[in-house]
Image 1 (cartoon, chains in turn blue, green):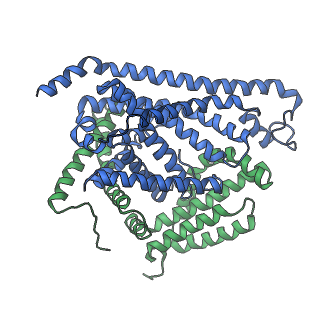
Image 2 (cartoon, rainbow over the protein chains, first blue to last red):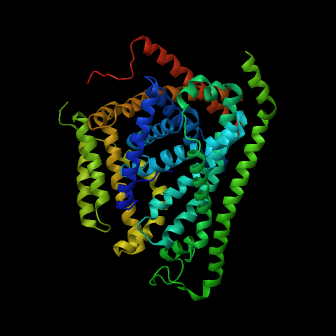
Length: 329
Length: 206
């Protein structure tokens, strides 16, 4: 979901533009230093691939379909910084050619999907891949990273959209975003996992091979990635826990009051009791949604881990043997 | 053809004009209806002069309206509080201003070919590596789109048009596309290297 123009406050747009530009400049420097003349060709093709892959619709239900977002996939293929540049290219084309996402929100979109999504996702992926090893590590790592990258991006989005407003507004936005993106995150993890598994079984060299390793190999300090990953996971947990901190009425109720299908439009919106008779049921509704948000986080996390372990069983038996074979050859 | 038609203008002017217009819209304080009206008239004049199909512009805007409306409902509380507008007016303000910005960008994109826009971005200070990536991306975009269409047609022919492909089959489709994309990139890169590619794109405009 790309942020359109106007919806961010001026300060949030300016701040994210600055952070995004600095992040992109850093990513370009890192990429430039490591790769030869092939850099731009490889990144351009990967960006075109991500764009094309986003056009493949996965049917979810009647009238609803989702698609791959691809931030983690790009980072797994090319490494975190090249992955971020790929996402930047996709966002720029979507913004200027297809008007998907605003110009003034380009920085925010890049921060959410490129820096938080691809680089942050890679920080989750890398420790898991190393800890588990082999193709199982790649598969499980990429799926878990895809899940967390979507949640973190949703959290960053809520901060940007709510910046400068009241705490209640921010928490309301956050709980809506967390609910919606728990579903999207599971979908992203599933699709990423299915694609990665397919590539690992049919063309493993695309992910493990010399081409990919050459691009990816980066003697990263041993502690940085786990620390970032831990921070990311903690933040993602906070996204779901935060609605409990809200002392305000529920968002739906708020919108309802504002549109006037609930009585008493003149009262200040967030005062505790604008409609005495309805207080109890609506209070329950608010609690239900908080519980739903937290439950969505828990269920989503468990689902993703479950799917990841299940799908990785394909590699459990053959992985070591195949690697030994490759060594022998 | 008269040379003062918008598609004859320097792409840098069009790009800077559209982005400048968006900035003017974004920076306007909420509820400044008269100012927005003036901007809307200016935009309408530019759109009419450019000869862009107006129903097409409106259709594009409507396509984005659902998402914008949802986000505007989320953000309107903040705007209402800081500006003193009522919640409904604040949401309306957000949707209207977003519509103006969207129209300006859509109209600009309709009269500016992407290669020219890319050239303008490079001239206006985009890092060369990013510009080159965007160039490659644009070149390969249609190639991959054709590839995807061919694969979909082939798939449909084999499954006799049966609908409701599973997630697995669709993910395999993406996986195959990835393989073909990277193979093609490798081939083209080898061919470019043989012709002296050194990582620096050169065009006739330079």
